[in-house]
Length: 431
Image (cartoon, rainbow, N blue to C red):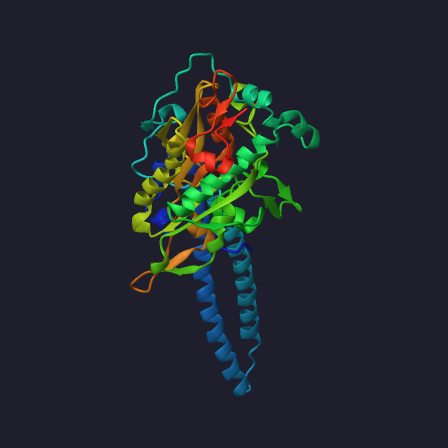
């Protein structure tokens, strides 16, 4: 069995008490997941009815066993009663098997149901319904036609897609020379910002993760085909540091005074689905392997939505310090990630690409992941309660790299280095 309560994704009591309300909230996501609520409740009823019958039969068996003992003491024939007890035992065994089947069916069905959108989320069917919450800075103006990052980076020898394809396949790249140093400088800049100014503790987790961890944060079972699996999918290459970092606290009962917990980590990330060919996935924009600095928060349930605002501001601070124009949007119900209750996406402007590119996604999962991981805290009254978990990219490197090259390109073909990066890159101009 998995290392967490297999029925703890959505609160089963909430599904029993308000099935129609749950269906209505799931319907705003689109798709057919709301239809699974009735299936979950049917499995739940079968399981509970079996437990009730089992308890009754166990009582009958105990009573008859005592009668058999008394009859034997008196020298009476107890054969008929013993046959009845054997029949009860067989029925109890059958009930156990039926209950296990109902449990497995309920678990499998619950795993397919996404988190409930927060009541305040804008309702919409897709990204066209995502409202812009705020913008920072302005789009840079150029006295020349801005180039895209592929042309800039190729001319300056910052990366090599052909060699990446030669040693691996399409969707991989080799950073070279100053280009590799720029990637490393960005990672160090991000980690320093979040640990020194935003109060995060840095960790360096494994990059190979077991199935329990992937179930715990919601990557499995829905996204299994998008992941790089190992040993018949008993393990996976990390799709994001969210998975190992959040699972650091799996199956723990924390003290209330431990909260909030703020952890950051750099990891390479691995995804099979890198997008289709075309301008929207050109160059570094969609890769099978990419670098990312992740921010994970574990907080008291009463603080999670306020903490989401703080987390988003911490991710935005990256772009502000680098002087990159961006906008922050709130995802509508139809565009939410599977495990999220509320999400902000931060989109940086890439002038050579002529579009905004998502560089960070900041989400509050409320207790959805914590239930899967059995991550709890003991409150002041001594009750064990589920924590709320949040995470955000702080930020993903490829599109940050793209926006930096395209925003700070100069007429002579060089790229100006943002002031915040100069101490890390040890130069003011690339080229």
